[in-house]
Structure formats: C-alpha cells, structure tokens
Amino acid sequence: MPFELFIGLRYLKAKRKSTFISIITFISTAGVTLGVMALIVVLAVMTGFEADLKEKILGTNAHLVVIRSGAPMENYRQVMEKLKQFKGVQAATPFIYNQVMLSSGKNVSGVVLRGIDVASDRQVTRLSKSVVDGSMDRLDPSMSRGPDATPGLMVGKELAKHLNLFVGDKVNVISPMGNITPLGMMPRMKPFKVAGIFNTGMFEYDSTLAYVSLGQAQSFFDLGDTVTGIQLKVDDVYHTGELARTINREMGVNFYARDWMQMNKNILFALKTEKIVMFIILTLIVLVAAFGIASTLFMVVMEKTRDIAILKSMGATGGSIMKIFVLEGLIIGIIGTILGVASGLLVALNLEPIINVIQKITGQNFFSKDIYYLDHFPSLVVPADVVLISVTAVLISFIATLYPSWQAARMLPAEALRYE
Image 1 (tube, rainbow, N blue to C red):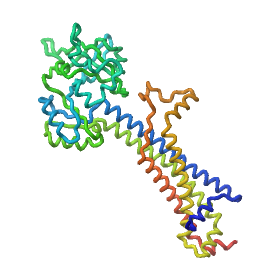
Image 2 (image 1 turned 60 degrees about the vertical axis):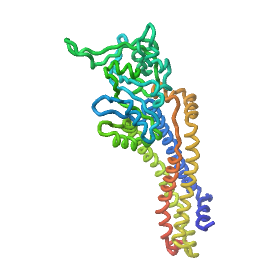
Image 3 (image 1 turned 180 degrees about the horizontal axis):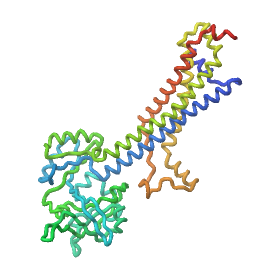
C-alpha cells in the first residue's frame, strides 16, 4: 500500500480530540450519498415516464407516416408495396385522416376520424390491444350485414364518457365538407354504431380519436379509391429519421414521410429538456456536499500542520503531501457515491411498493389513475445514467480536494514548526 494512501486512511479515523472533524466528515459523506441517491431515483422516474409515454404514442401511432403532398394518394396499393421494399420496413397499412363532429342526443364533440384497414392495421399499430369493450373486428363492413346494416365506429374511453356512449349505441358522424345544394353547403351526415371503445392511456387520444373502416371512410368523404397516406412499422423505432429521409429522397417530391419523433417532437423535447435540467439541479446537492469535503480537508490540514512538517522534513515531496489529502477526500466521495448508488437503486427498483406503503400510512392517494392516466408508477433504471451520476459525483469530490491539498503541499516545514 502506498504510504500516501496509508496516511490518508489514518487521518480519516477519529481521535478523541478530533471528533468534530469526524462529524463533518460523516456529514460530507452523507451529503454525497443523498445527492447520488436523489439523482438516481429522480432520473429513473423521469426515464420511466418518458418510456411509458413513448410506448403509448407508439401504441396508437405508426412509426412512420407517408402522405402525398396536397392531394389524396392514388394507387396506394402499389405505393404500399414499394414502401415495403425499403430496408427496415416490416409492415404497411393505408389510412384516411379527417376532422368531423360526433353527435349523440344533445352531446356534440369535434374529433379526428381515422379510416383504417382492420386486417393490416394490426400488423402496424397496437390499437387492437387497447380495446377495452367491444371489438375492433366489428369495424369490418362484413360484420355489419343483416337487418341492421349500420356501419361500425370505435371511440376512445374519454370520448365515450363525454358523449355518454356504450357499445351498440348509435352516433351521427357529421362532416363540414358536405354537399352543395341550392340552399348552399349542407353538412354530410351518416349514422354509425359504436363497435368498440379503446383506452390508450393518453387523454389526448382517448378524447379526440374515432375509427371506422377504410371503405366506410372513403365512402363518407367521397374519396373514391384513394387514401390520405400509408402508415409503416419499422425494425428500429429510434432510427426512423434516417429512413424517413431515404423515403423522401427515393419517392420524389410528391410524397412526404414523417416519423413519430417529428410528429411528437414538442413533448419529447420537453421531456428531454426537463431531464437535463433536473440532472443539473440535483447535481447541486452533490456540489454542496463537495464543499463539506473541502471544509473537512481544510480543518484536517490545520490540525495536521505538525505532521505535514515532519513528513516534509523526512523527505516527503509536495506532490506526496498533496496526494495524501486528495486521496482522503476521494475516499469520502467514493464511499458516499457507493452508498448513494446502492440506496438509489434500492429505492428506484422498488419505488411502486414504497409509494403504496406511504399511501397506506398517510391515507393519501398521491397518483390517482383517473388524473395521471397511469396503471403503475413508472421507474426505469438506465445503467448509463447510473455510471454518469457516479462519475460526476466522484469527479466533483476530486475537484473539491484540489485546493486544500495544494495548500497543504506548499506548507513550509520551518513555518509549521516555528511555534512547536
């Protein structure tokens, strides 16, 4: 063991006359521990929320959307086959997208109506898995045969609450782009029957989206054999930007591809910015603990003035003296970091049971599922985040040791022993 490390460890041990310094050392270590633990827990929660949000977005939307600029897409079947040839594309499905109003009794709501191909949509989105009542299959026109041939429509959970709709109820779909008559523009209206209710877990989707079959949408909007665009499912959802640029380049100026990150860039950017800001703010806790480490070393240097002088008289260099106190401060920082990582991981990996216990003790429901749209409290530990936090904490601790260690190294033996 190098003598610098040996002496640094000796200085960490409390003597009867230096109990106060040991208390400051303990507080400094606890400060680093709390800072690291807070960073790990908060970043795990924010990463969990981000992952949960992305899962909900991708559960309703496709990874990539290709539309034709300024006009409906003709020959969409050939376009679909061409898009499937691009590397990384797994499946494709056509869709129609338009704004309408839903009317049920005295209740009216503006919504986005999507026409989908029921069979191929299952291969691209996870919409069918979010159906909580009824069935997505009932959107298929073949399911509407019989005495009551009313076509099917699927609405979100919140929209169903607002319009007081249940599976089997009738609802009128009204399009402002209607037929021209001698009396002017008359809105187009058609009755549909609620075939299913879905719950994506996102209020924006559940309150503003409704689905019908592709054929019914084409007929209602008088589109003929055209669609709004093509939805694509790809292999890697985090490299869709490059694929979108390739499609734009290969398909020509008449087609425009957008990936899910572009379509949701505002909320994703807000989450990323918030995570960075929280990391910076919580790092200040570790920085405050680093000041405690620096204060501890200053007091140790003042107490060990005589020891420093004797070591220098015996031939110890300024670098060795500096190394002693740097190692002492680093040991405090490393111990605090290790304890912080261990406690942070323990809390982050068991956060939901911990919150449930706290809620039972206090009788308060901190995260109501009706308000926050969460069926669980998300917490996701990313190893890279843990490594970054650990390295940052140790680096801050190291920087905090430099000035007091440098002051100890430049101490002159004669000055230190003058009054001994």
